[in-house]
Length: 118
Image (cartoon, rainbow, N blue to C red; front, side):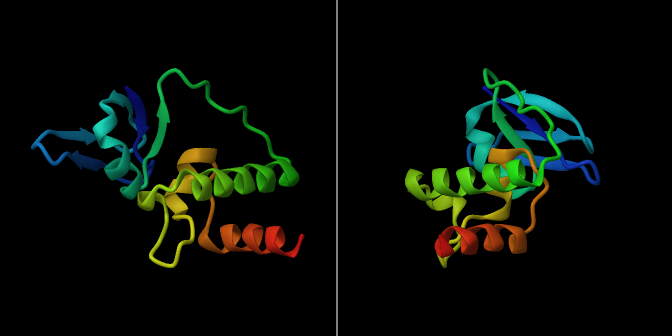
């Protein structure tokens, strides 16, 4: 099972390829089958395995960059084509799901650039 949280600003309908649908109200969290992982991420939902503990909230900018960099590395080594764009860059939703942070594409690119400069 995975835990899916809908964005706070809108409801989400998750539909599987086998005809199963789940409706989530804005901000609603629900445990669902793993088959909804990709569609939930594409819809902007936060997704995490049920047995995983939520990351503690921290406001440290260094820690934020470190989390983003780690998520980028995980995506690049996983080989998952669902989590990257056609250009091979990590999808914003994938970074959000892995870090729990509200990140932008520009922020991800900046972290990637700093990693390339090192």
